[in-house]
Every structure is written in C-alpha cells, then in structure tokens.
Length: 308
Image 1 (spheres, rainbow, N blue to C red):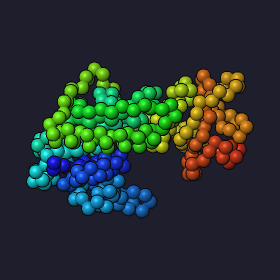
Image 2: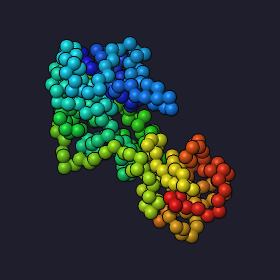
Image 3: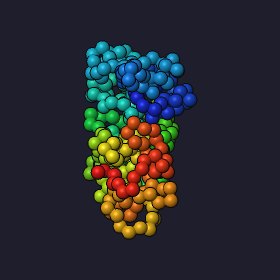
Image 4: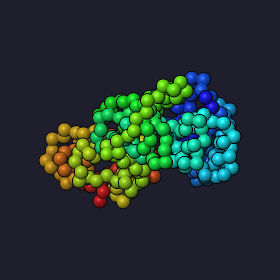
C-alpha cells in the first residue's frame, strides 16, 4: 500500500510510529508549515515533522492544500490511501486522488463529539466513556462512513492530557487494523446517525474561565477537561490564575460565597454553590506551577475571592 500520512501534533506521532513498527512505511508525510515561536520567534517544527525527519521520510508542508503544485505532487505519488491523524480539513480535490480515498483517526466515538476538541469536551461534559473511530473522509467535518471503533472508560480522576495519551495509543493500533482491512477488502463501513451527533468545537482562552457559580462537579470536570491545555483559569488580585488539578472535598464548613478562598490545615479550598473544591496544582500569571500548600505560603491573605 502506498500511503500518504498527514498529521501535526504528538497525538499523530504515536500513529506514525505504529505504522513504522508494523512495516507500513508512508511514501511521504504532510504536516503544517514551521511556525515562529517564543521570544526569539524561532521557526519551530511540528511534532510530526520532528519524527519524520528522524525517520528520513519525505516531508511536504504546503501553506494551502488546494495549491495546484501540491495537488500535482500527490497525483504523481500514485497513492493508494491518505491517512489523516489530527490535521486540517482536507478539500475534496485531495479525497479523490488515492485509490481507496482518505481515512481519519478521530478521538471520539463518532458521531459524538465531532470537531477539534473531542477529548476536552468529553471530560468537561462528565462522560464516563470515550474511544477512537476510524472513518472515510468526505467533504463535511467528521461525517464520513465509520470503519472501526474502540471504546475506553473515562476514569473519574483522569485529565484531558491523560486521556489524550491513552487514546493516542489505542488509536494507533486501531489505525493499523483499519489499514490492513482496507488492503484486504475486509471493511464493512456504516453511516453515521446525524441525529446522535454532538459538537466538539475548538476551545479558546475566553472559554476556559471558571464560573464559580456552577456546581462542584461541573467545575471539577471543567478543570480536568482543560488540563494541561488550554487550562482552566480564574483571577486572583487582578492576575490570571491557571488551575490544573483539583478534587471534590467533603470540607464541613458553613456555606460560603462561591469563589471564596479558604485556608484549612495547609490546604487550599474554594467554595462553590453546593460544596468545596480542594485546589492541588495552580499557576499564577508570571509564576511557576505550584501546589495548593505553596500557594497559601506564598500569598498572604485573610479573606479573598477568586474571580473578583
């Protein structure tokens, strides 16, 4: 099989590594152009490019996927299949180039959580199950015919980052199963039920602000669903405070105004409308990540509220 691999972040790297381990060597890799990052605006490779360079694979980084020269290059590669993992939306001009079309590995049980951030939204919404799906790409986002799915449990304390790593591993194996099935003609695709579809749109910083008036479990899921990135945040003394980890507490105190900060036996708590959360890992603007105990020792206050 002559395969073209398309991907960008480390989630896709796991799948690329799995291809190589199973002697499925892509004829080329497509990833995003290098981007300037940091104070020095140094051009930085995507994680997929870094891995591809180490493997000696040919790499293409088109600015526009509809570029005529790029499309011509792909046509000359005599492709059997395009494999997409965490990449951009493919224009229809590309879908018809390979013999078997293009497939995608998506980090949800489609049609649930179509979109750019399925892992984050699954945890934010308190789901107890997730998984991965391989499907044939069509012109709409995440709507093509499903090939295979693999489920996994979302443990109550798992963060988005931990689920991300787990699904990357599960997905890399499902991808191999999918490619082998396509090659041998053993796929039985089925259409998605659009009525069961749920969205998983891209998450921006403004979407990550904690609403302390929500109930305890919702805030807890919100924090772990955005950890470690893009990270839930609030404000403290006019500075942004990122919160990476918390846990629901059985603290026995009288009701407090939501967002009230409480110091109790070297532990940091915050009040919610129906209880309390203990804050375990946080980071003040301009500072490093610290524990709740370190926060208490580093910031002097008697009464204060997050979000004020």
